[in-house]
Image 1 (cartoon, rainbow, N blue to C red):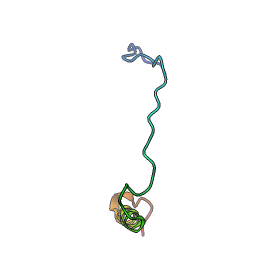
Image 2 (image 1 turned 90 degrees about the vertical axis):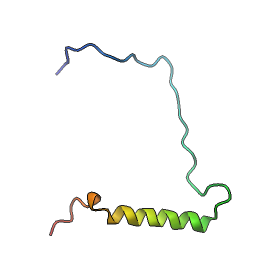
Image 3 (image 1 turned 30 degrees about the vertical axis):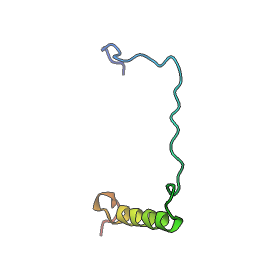
Image 4 (image 1 turned 30 degrees about the horizontal axis):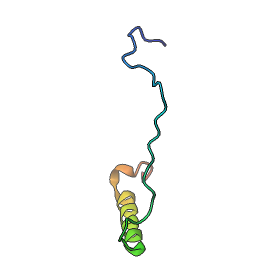
Length: 57
């Protein structure tokens, strides 16, 4: 289905790449502290009720 409205954007003339920062501890941060934070974030995500889609009784 096509829209009758005109496009309100113009295609890019050049390609722009945005590099993401490397995954790992920040300068001065220990690897143990970084891993602890990653683990806590994963636990928070697992325990979040909005992410439990198929946990029906």
